[in-house]
Length: 413
Ligand code: LLP
Image (tube, rainbow, N blue to C red):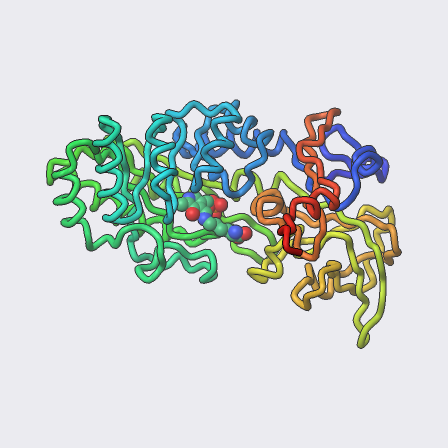
């Protein structure tokens, strides 16, 4: 994403130095051009029914780009639903799922006439029937199934094994059929699944497609008119040069083999794949030290800014924007948070760094800012969008005083 022109770091036509001059680190930067390319390429290969998984990056400006590229939104909370509506998504292009939707959430979704509410339990189907009757409406629903397929990804981001909390057990199909047949205000028109994130093994996709096709046909034979089959997200992004190769073209091959002759409308819900590589985190070195023979660079971004390394042991490449190409010092890059897990990378080879130098933490467009927090009473990071020679601050970090003022001290103290 970062390109050096005459040794100056550029993103599209904008010098990163111009951004650093007006925005305090740490901040995220996104390239509109990379987002557009990723979305267009995904649509070209997998078809028009792409629903951006809003949880991966929910900034209104990012959503606006997705909406203008004519894809839909996949939301998992009423907050994400409201964000998507306010960014301009038409309700008919929004899918609402999530393992814990409250009654109020469902009422809001029903009122907005969104494309599909994907239910995740038999109890939720019963509640929806009750709410739809009260509102005197007939609503389209989907069911998210748990196909008991191991995506081969780390357990913290696996969602499709039968012991995971997500979806309805695939063995409960008879019960779903019996239940919805008696729900006069519900039209079951879709099935969906999502077996996990960062899945590179094509056989996992293949087995999922085969299973979902079987299930769709089973519903149809029972007289339920399934029109939509939503095959989730989870496409792999290469964070590390040793990561496996992954191409969505290979998914398309399996898709055609499995669904080629059917008339179901197929959709996908990628998040990471569309946005991870379009973002970087820019941070400054605030301290350097040697402890036990380790060269520490302490930066102003911490696990509160980007939690993925601390939470999942996730790897993010780090690069310097110094002109020196001699990468000869081994560093451990750590944040300022008072936790031993607040480490971004160990033993990375960089040119010699000093206090005030800038480091770039790469591929952080997905699950970066959205998972940030004010832990240790630190501000949330700002976000910048670059479009050729222009850039705009799309989230401005609040002064920490504002965060402090939000606490309410009771009268007896
Ligand atoms: N659809 C559903 C129902 C999901 O639960 C998810 C992600 C997606 C789509 C999009 O998955 P993607 O294409 O982005 O892999 N915070 C973790 C990732 C959690 C993903 C949860 N579900 C991380 O930073 O790796």
